[in-house]
Image (cartoon, rainbow, N blue to C red; front, top):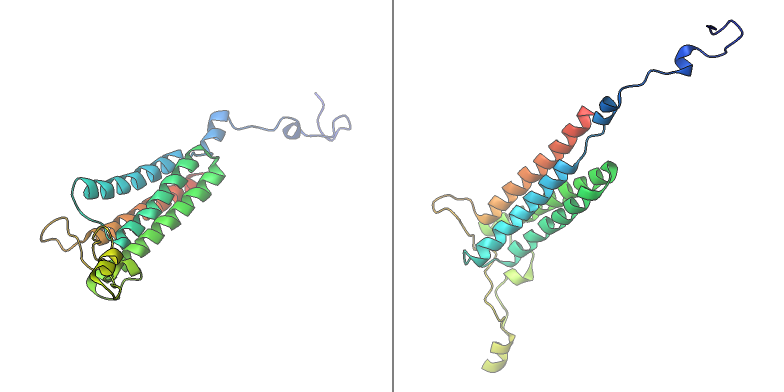
Length: 192
């Protein structure tokens, strides 16, 4: 057998046949983000299902800020669904966008908690008392909304005696959701 440096072969044996890792070990380094994407979808769907069930079966009327707080969960649900079918790099980006979206929901919920506590007025004009136009009674009735809106500063408590409003519960859920999703993705990156 010829040895490198004897003039016959210019390569070492390691250069000719490098040692390879077994395929099952190399495959373990690429961890799928599908469990994190599925968790994102399920958590966002659970939040929306809870809100809609309270509205439909619980008879709780949402205020304008409550309705705004639902949109980030819809966006996170869509991002999670798309992340389920994307490659790992794109899925990671989509899930980080979902984390940012859910953190935005926590910020909206914080604003709602502040409105309920009287720390500041609501930023939405729908939360203010209706301003009736001057004129006849018929004109005033025509300018009123068809359905009475719940004021945003009227907190809704699910459990009597527990001072946690639905807006505060939403804020806490959004913070836990974002922390769990980001730590799950970060933990997967460290294990690579």
